[in-house]
Image (cartoon, rainbow, N blue to C red; front, side, top):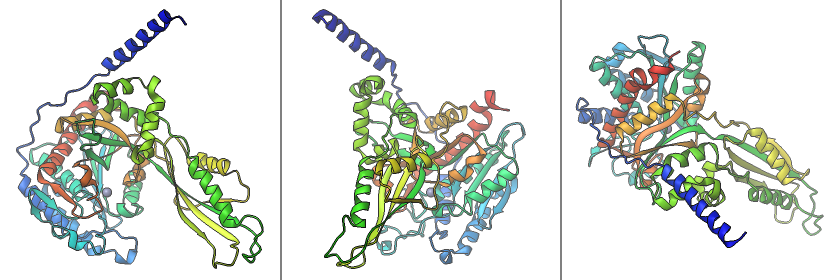
Length: 493
Ligand SMILES: [Zn+2]
């Protein structure tokens, strides 16, 4: 290549990079919004505070289940939201979960469902003293409602109830049926609550337009380069797999070892496995997340994000540096149990390990098992799938009108935020509803700074009154937008 052709090629390349970057438009999100004047936030905060006092705790041991707290919660909801209990059909499912049906006037429109859960995690014994206000007191102080469940997720349940109560009060009745589902055992897998609610709806032949469960929040300061908070909407959930790896080898006295011990064989296999994870890819959800966030980034970052065809490798390497983005990009591998040996001078005949995988929607239980076999490539190792495997969820389409309704509603209530699809690395009740719709979203309109995230399932859980008002407003607008707004034109059956 002559210097001139090289020069021309370089200029062309720069031109392509710049044009693509400029086309990557930036939205300035400082539109005005008005929070509703018809919601009395002090009264709403008092109701949430009262709900926090019921110790609807889910623990791993069934004997600790406190039935009366759940029943008291049901009675409280009846008293606190009289219009809902007058205008909606309420069903108690499997004794403690709740299903409300707000019948729409147009039976041709598919119902929309909002879900959360009424159980909470226990307070870790010994940490009670670290709470600024007792976890089940429901204190209102410094502009916050304090207590277990304010963030996860009595705040969500009550915000939905407030929104519906308020809409009924204003004389509204929906064209599209709205379902509210509140499971009672999400924190221990939802096998009794959400599972049964979904079964009941399935038996009735109900197919939903979309379902919104609790999920990822609005995260502030997510990246130092990004000034806007990001509302993360999880459009899929990772799968779950644990494999038991075991080896049998010659035993005997440790003074006369015969080749490698079972510990050595298994360690070597695990070493190979952990050093050869399933490669991550910038496709699907990760790509969509970047497409949503990219245009808001400073110019230099936008050059990179707008030109993934050129910078893909660089971006992948950067994302793989951070555990959170690495987990979003690929199936994770973690060896969680290793057992072998009984005495210091006896050669162990057995070694056993459990390796836990969180399966990315790019992969499947079968493909991971194949990967494990091929990577270890050792016939001495037995592989057994443990109980409780779950395939990764279906990925909801961000091109669907229901996603647009959700995204537009978030931007209407939180004008400064960037809405981005994401992958849920943990699990929620949403998976139980998988058969009811193609569009499942996991999002909670809760604002969380990094330091707030540890309050969820942790100490000093709290929700600001201001954010609680936004949450109520969000669910109210979402119901209105889903029943009379964007969805209706082209999406009715
Ligand atoms: Zn939760």
